Amino acid sequence: MAEMERSDVRDDELMPVIFERKLFKIGEGGIAVTLPKSWINYYGLKPGDRIEVVIDVDLTIRVKVSPEEKPLEEKPT
Image (cartoon, rainbow, N blue to C red):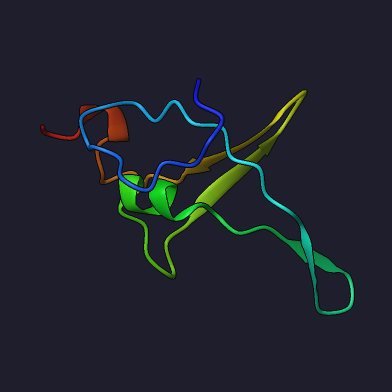
C-alpha cells in the first residue's frame, strides 16, 4: 500500500492508500477527524451523507449504504 495521499483516484480501482490524520477538539468534549479529499471523491460523498464508524479490535470508517441502494462493490463501471 502507498504511504502517501493520492489526489487523483480512478473509480474502477481500489484505493490502496494509508492516510494519517490528526484529531482536533470541537466544542467542550468532542473530538473530530477530517476525511481525505480523495476518499470523499472516490465514494462521491457530500455534506449530509452518512458514514459508519465500526469499533472493534480496529477502528473502521465506511460509507453507510441505505437499504434501497446497491452496495458500493456493485456500482456500474
